[in-house]
Image 1 (cartoon, rainbow, N blue to C red):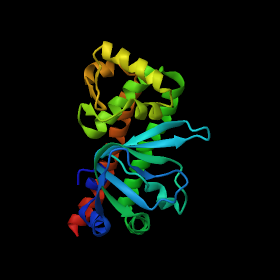
Image 2 (image 1 turned 90 degrees about the vertical axis):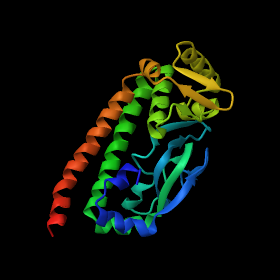
Image 3 (image 1 turned 135 degrees about the horizontal axis):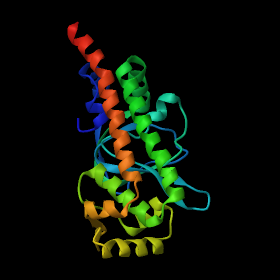
Image 4 (image 1 turned 60 degrees about the vertical axis):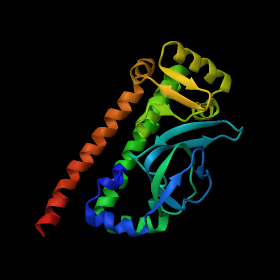
Length: 243
């Protein structure tokens, strides 16, 4: 399992999910769920990136988080039947495992390790939401775009990102003309190279210099959350091995 949440589960707990897990393709720009829809599936990306978008009444959008192999989409269905508050759009194609939300809830109810996995995911997402909120309020659009590009790069583990100016405009909540100007500035300093086919090649070091501190802060805090979760699982695994 290349998804970090699934890979961290002890074998007996993963076995509760595996019979119901289905491998799916994440098609570029596919809408996995829309705000207001009931959550039907929990999706665990293995490769690729999914943006969680807020849709405003006037038609504007903005991304609140991006989910790659370190997370999942639809996990909050364990809190009970409720409509999704965000629209989930694939921003980098790949593959994922999905499980019906009702089946995931059944395993969640039976397994302390799966409940701990959900806690890990929620904590990591809260880091994105909280730092993202502060970033949107305090940092200029160029630094925010650099942060998002670095974040998506972390999700796909590749320096070439399949992003159009339109998709970046939707994620950042700014006009496309603003994206054009910012990309020109980032190209000038060598942080990115835009391809006419809708690909953006990044120079990670130079892009990090253009980004705000939020990207690195997110990475550090999320890694600490995963490390804490792994430490918490050790006594449970040792206890099972002893039996």
